[in-house]
Length: 558
View 1: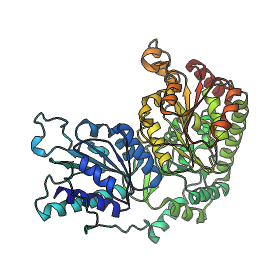
View 2 (view 1 turned 90 degrees about the horizontal axis):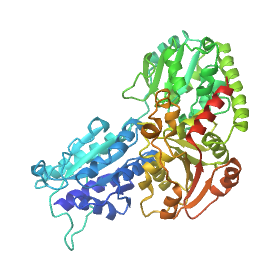
View 3 (view 1 turned 120 degrees about the horizontal axis):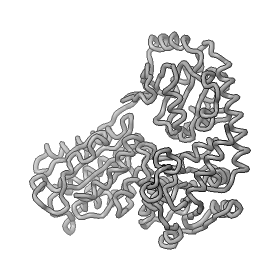
View 4 (view 1 turned 90 degrees about the vertical axis):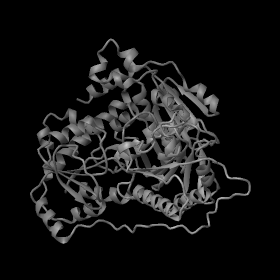
């Protein structure tokens, strides 16, 4: 009966449109893994390190927009999924996490590879489900059908997210000779028809009246995927001076004229009162810029957040309206409204943006060479279209500081939990889903922390990795607390002497290294050329020098 039950589990996944699974080897999970491998409509990969496997699945689901399945054996294997599961939860990425487990009578009985797996991911999954531990009756099989359907529907309901299915299994784990998985069995598949949330005429009329009370409106998209239609509407709103649009790099909503340098603009404005909004409109997820977040928190303004449904946080401590609507539909309604905006408000923001952009461009051209200047050049050589993964710590911050318009380039960053632990694996997962060049820009600490991202049997000719190696966690030189402590080098920067060259040789990657600006400019065209192998470009610099250069650049913009 177990073979029928597991066959049905996989069939239901396939009939819901699941096409990808990432499996980690194990004995107790063998029947689940074999069923996924043998299903003709599901493509499986095997990755031994569960932490890397989970981030790869996250990177795939990030791009595909549908659940990717994870399968592992019992015990600590499941715990290794936790960082990626938390990231998927806060980044709204659908994962179907399937963990094999001991049957309930053997929990806490000193049996091998046995921990308390029920609800193991706590509040960082949308839902945690426990399948029956036997299928002696038809009702138990019906119970499995129901739970698997519920899990997939929950993972794909807004906001998307991870769902955990724990599967208690008894021996035998392997099908006997002649026993097969039957995917032709008739299994029930529950579907949900989802429409676009729409506000009533009464609600829109009230919003229109409320809008008339505001003259200085900021629209601030948060972290999200690119959307051409959304960017076009935002560009129209900004150019018409109906509102000012601040577009961070990770919002993927860049357009000509958008305010894209908040980290350099806001600290250098002498009279911030001229830029104060009376209404902030947001959609998408989190912001990266600390200066922008502080500015929004200090503003005397109302805050409207737009999303289809679900929990809405109050990150700027002034949420006055949670509007359940499709952001694109809302913005189209917004631009059609006739109200008197303060045109000087838009002009002041535009003038400051133009000024800081010109000064930054001059400054970067003349800046000393270090990792900041390296990213400046790397961005100018990126192929289009392509995708860029920015590792956490300084890589994502440098790129955001530059605020470059990224047309035909998708910017991806794990800003759900903002950890360094799975940046490389996420980029690898992304590369599995596309033929476009996928460029990972990462620091040395994040790169070596996640080196098992490359420990698998799959070639990635479209993957490019730029490692900013300053032999330390350089971000701590830029934080006021640790930067002045005598323990900085040993206990915060955690200096290391590794190079990516050995890893490149081990995994048969092409490898280039540079220490000077001229070397980088010569290497970049070669680095982005087509190749049958992945490539690593290692940029060497010194942590203290990088900190000094960034401070000099900031000072020159005042």
